[in-house]
Length: 131
Image 1 (cartoon, rainbow, N blue to C red):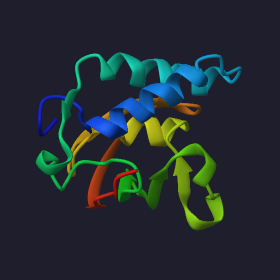
Image 2: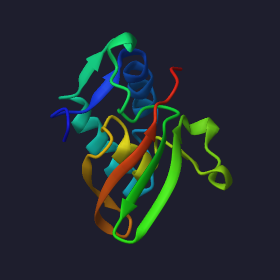
Image 3: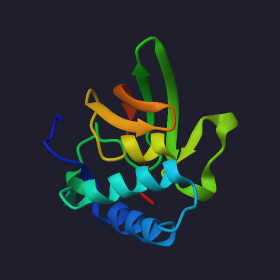
Image 4: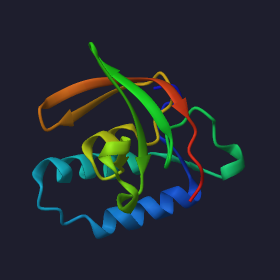
């Protein structure tokens, strides 16, 4: 992990905590597990001001290319109401969205997905815009 912990911008952190509080009662087991892990990681995350955010950290509206073995995909991580799978916009509440959020370009991320534990690596990231 490039920075040793998740890095989140203050406003995005507050917004994410609100979303997680509202969705804490998800009935989908895999989504619930991902959100619980993200919630746990947020306990040790660095929360910083917008002007100090590193440009390579995955945040809301970031467009990131990830790979796992031969598979690769370019996605954008968005707030739940902006998800659109046809445009590769995935919600922060999905296992993939919650796995990537707060990590930096080049980090290897181990996460439990519905089809098992996978290791992802981001190798391209365009920084998101603030909420």
